[in-house]
Image 1 (cartoon, rainbow, N blue to C red):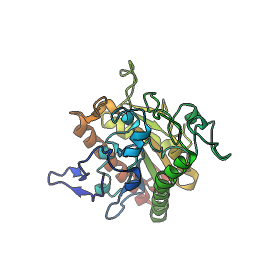
Image 2 (cartoon, rainbow, N blue to C red):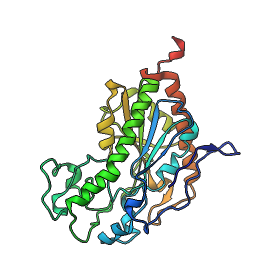
Image 3 (cartoon, rainbow, N blue to C red):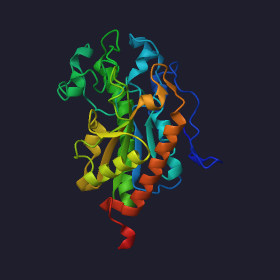
Image 4 (spheres, rainbow, N blue to C red):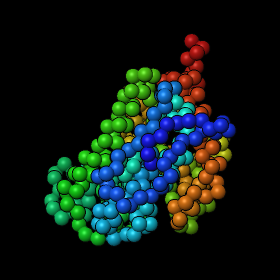
Length: 319
């Protein structure tokens, strides 16, 4: 991904000229920008989008540390999610997308969720060694990819983890916190859509919904907004479930403070809807899914402008 400015195509469809390079492993991780922030010319609604797991730059030193090949290491990647929601800037909404891959550093974790078994040296006391994410092998520096295969051929140093947090995790969250602060200053409130994709579990494709909304079981977003988001997505033909199996990660828990005017909903899109999962390639339905999600964003922006901080059902213009 590279910097892009939002534009509207001649056919009326929103488009974003993402750089055509989709996967790169020759550059060093330190040579890439940690994120791309696509800003509209003017933000039109109190809505911010994030895509923390769609980064797909795998530096040579990363692959040298890994026991997985260049394809297998991508199994934790939320491929093309930033493109699915790429209409956001043209609709007046900022979109923050990580450039670094989740397998390198996970921006949807606390900064120091680390498995001591992965490191050659002793970890400081402030490290969270016992979270459920660490136990599952999916801490800030993951031990495994999403399908369960170990990533590394040998142990890492804590200095390596520090460098990743400093150069990837910290800049991403500084940018996100800044966007939320700016949005609150402009509109008095902010709603973050934290965008992800979910793999198809073996043998369970018939039972998995198209989209899972995570609001921390009602703690990160008001019931009214979550219900409205669900109704919009259902109206666009998606099957939707809440908080099962994904209730939200660090971004949802940390930033979602409805009483302080900040709400966060995690949105997981089934990968089988829009891509060939084994080949990491868009499928024939990609454009259709993208168009429906663009319509959803347009409707959400309209709703945010209409109802304001009070939420669905309240029309500020009527006061």
